Image 1 (cartoon, rainbow, N blue to C red):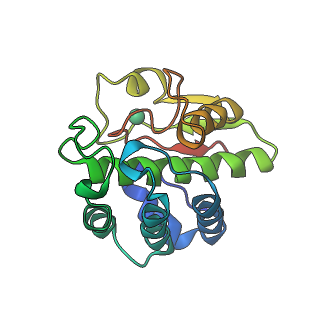
Image 2 (image 1 turned 90 degrees about the vertical axis):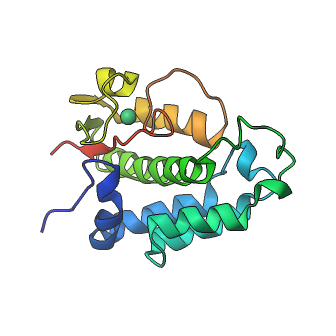
Length: 180
Ligand SMILES: [Zn+2]
């Protein structure tokens, strides 16, 4: 049986239910990689537990968002006065970004360990037509090593830049896909 992968963000949850090897890789990364950002600073582990529960299949995406809002209240953050960090929908933006970076990181590792360096990015039903990732990433094959390097720099090391990565922005619905 061929392995299942997500063609866009909306398919990640069902993909992890049927692809156990990938699910374990995602869980390992979610247990070990830093989770960075003002909304989680000094409370990274609370966010990590919620994300692990999501990846294990114990809670849904919307439950992960609600638990993040309640478990990491804005008032407890040292950045609570910063409206930019806590703009409306901050919990969903954080959860979506983290699910996407861990999922895509895992798929890229798997592609590279299989001896390939090609990853394809499908167009997504919910993509933003004007976004740079839609114009430059979607519908094309890319270097898995390059996209992985950019994901690590942004989401594990906190060096945000304009490099092409997935997710490219907080509402990015693209995913990387192995080229058979
Ligand atoms: Zn995108």
